[in-house]
Image (tube, rainbow, N blue to C red):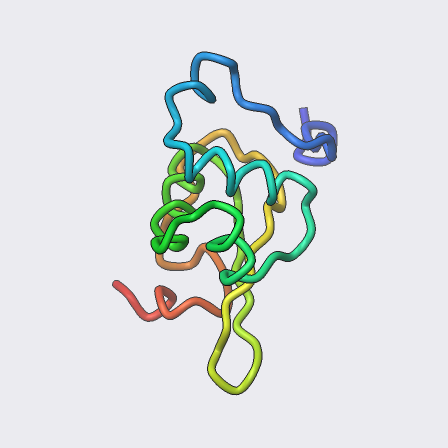
Length: 105
């Protein structure tokens, strides 16, 4: 099976037992990001009530989601979106082109 054949553009939904174990903040952020559109860190913080949006994004990456971030504006405001469900831990120094984490390692 080729990579092309394995690609499924439908958004991934976690298994109910996994979803139920997630913290309320992580669930709320997932619910917003699952539309696969860009959302600002401020928007995610307001909707989820979490002051640690980057930590919740990291948890979703560890759960297998590929979530790039985009830094825009004068102050480098972060925006995130779910690209796909990869099925493996996607946190690594090169998970996106714009994160400060690209300099790690």
